[in-house]
Image 1 (cartoon, rainbow, N blue to C red):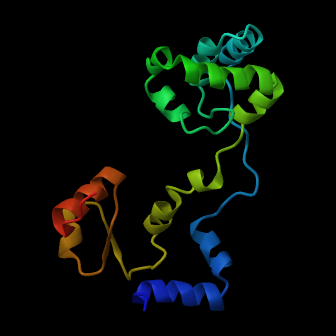
Image 2: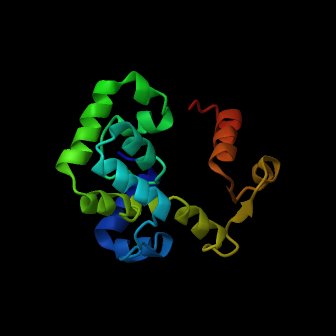
Length: 174
């Protein structure tokens, strides 16, 4: 038997206009604009792709928000660009794919893709809560002490702030 809140969510999804209500919290756009690319960075990508300069191509692509394709090793290489020198086989594999299997148009399409909806939804719930959709039922609090003193309150803050609260007051270990 799920807890009461999980059961309420299940009942809502099965019996009511769940998606219409959910849209009030998460107003997901049906169309999103493509990501913008710096012209100089794109010119460098063009040059390094044409010259098959794998290392410099990867380094230039890492300057962009989105890599043109998904690969499990990309985030590691992007986080630690020195690892490019230490992993020549991986660089060759990725660079070869970029230069031999992808056209510049395909790379451009990949790096300019709009953010996925799930990535854009992060702050929406918090913004909805702050809009006070419950009227005076709950009070919005921004300090631990104020939140703990109020029987019907919602604690608002950034991820680190809320994580610290959970660790300090709820003994939750992350």
